[in-house]
Image 1: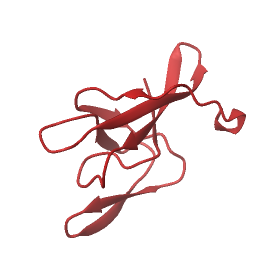
Image 2: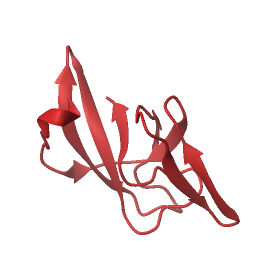
Image 3: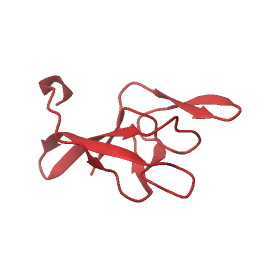
Length: 90
C-alpha cells in the first residue's frame, strides 16, 4: 500500500486518542530520561491534549473499509505521544 506512495490531504488529528501502531519498522519514541522504540502493535497517543500540541494525519491508503493513516506530530513529541511517521488504521 505504501509503495503506491498515495498521500491524502493533511487534516487536523483532533483531540487526544490512542492508536495501535502498524509500522513494520520500529520508530523512536523520546522521553525526558532517554528514548524507547515503538513497534508493531504498540500504542501511542495522537492528537491534542493539555500537554501536547497535537498534529496532523493523512490517509496513505485503503484496504476494504479501513483507511491507513500516517501521523505527523507538532514540535518534539515526548512520552506517550506518537512520533512522526506512525501508521495506524482508522
